[in-house]
Length: 278
Ligand SMILES: [Zn+2]
Image 1 (tube, helix red, strand yellow):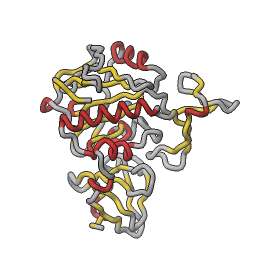
Image 2: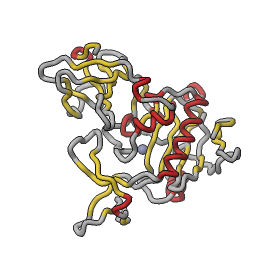
Image 3: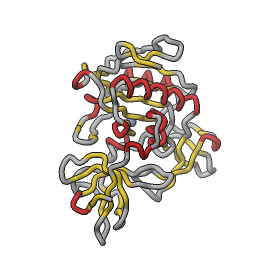
Image 4: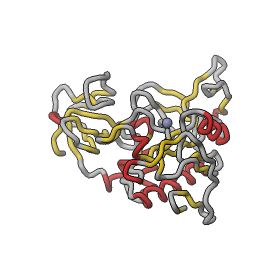
């Protein structure tokens, strides 16, 4: 895939189908995206998402169906309404600075008394399409999540590659909605491995861009928080000696990711006073 005039061009060298929406807000800040934000639709069909993005005051640049079919709804140099209240690094309100990709997926599921998995609308999701995992913002609480389909992932990866190359977006600026709106949002959730996604989109190992390592130096540990202040309860306490990647050092509160083996990074803010170079 590639990008031509802020439109996505498929592997067949044709522009992907475009369905316009009035739910968009003019040009992006600086005329180009700086971030790429991944979402799930919390729905069952691409058509349902497209209808919502035409009818309700929400939208995204791309919708990726289960079979990998992509529909573009907003040009990549224009604002789509996908992120809402959000922040990443020193930027607030990511709609003005990002491309949003919505992947058709129910997301978090619940279980009936009889043991079936159902979506928030009550639609039954077969057991074979459910993965059990805990969300990185709520460690220890296990839920069922709908799996993402292989063709859907391939298409999302190909589109993301084209976008990051065209607009020179950096690995740590490819994020989940749950990274930039961690109080409100849980998509794309644990069924979408954002670290593996970054690695394959950029074609290198995660370590290649995660070389700024610090260690927690505090006998009582260091609280990891969802926002760069004390407004909310900590996500977790990082024990003395924990290694973190430092993603951004805008001031006294640093955006960091805990270094875990074979699991999702847990991102959040720490007070830098108790971090020392590893
Ligand atoms: Zn979202």
